[in-house]
Length: 345
Ligand code: DAH
Image (cartoon, rainbow, N blue to C red; front, side, top):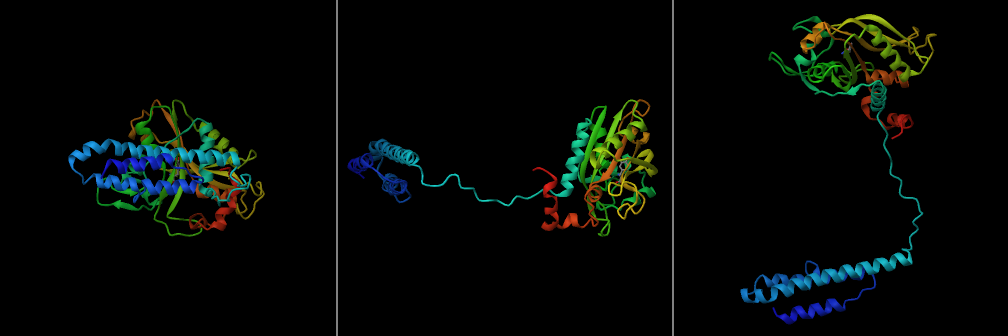
């Protein structure tokens, strides 16, 4: 390896001229590519004596820098002249159309519910899908072996433990987690996936979605609950919507109620969707049981609150008159495409 080798290449680089981008790339490969002449000198450099190294190290590096700089310079020059000539391509031509997906109907409904309650000042809270018995049952006033536990057939993850892990059967567990960690007053909405050991049919599935709501403050009454649900129902199903409340039972609320909305298809006259009654059931709700407040360290003498829970698939079924729950889980594009116009993406 000699000084002249380096100088010769340097002279070549300085004299280098190219007319097209392709030529520049070829020159880059010729000098600096894997098998390029400068790369070869670097390979050789590794094998020479220390003294030669000391003498040729710097000029060799300078050669590489000069080559890189010249290639860049040529690239720019060619780019500029191309831009001034115009590239010859029609830049106004429409691009290639990419097929765009659409939101799943359950996601659309979840977003609508969350948006409505956000307007009322609710925050969104989430909790784990694999929960413990305490948060799903015990803290919600389901004592061990209480028959109310049979209302929700549970998938257990670890049995035989005093507080076994399980797949949450309802999003009411997020109520408990919110009460444990949030400051009062609490206003939360908790959307999420829930699991029950149910045979799959047109009306039931082992995985579905719920939204839970919780409001706790001083002096909250059943009238506040009724008003919140009425406002929600009108935003969701239209301004003419009426609600009715029927007494019910849930271990975590007292009193408890189930809420129906007036059928938005027949407007109360009776049709096959509302089975001739003029009403459609949408959710369960009630005043939070004092035992539930106490379990999470809230003083029931000072505070009161209401809670409600609804199934998203059910709301979506009512909104779009889908009569088979299984459609929501099959991801049949013909079904999903029906909802393309329901939301701006
Ligand atoms: N967790 C109940 C269920 O899954 C629904 C529910 C009813 C939630 C009443 C509530 C409530 O917060 O107050 O069936």
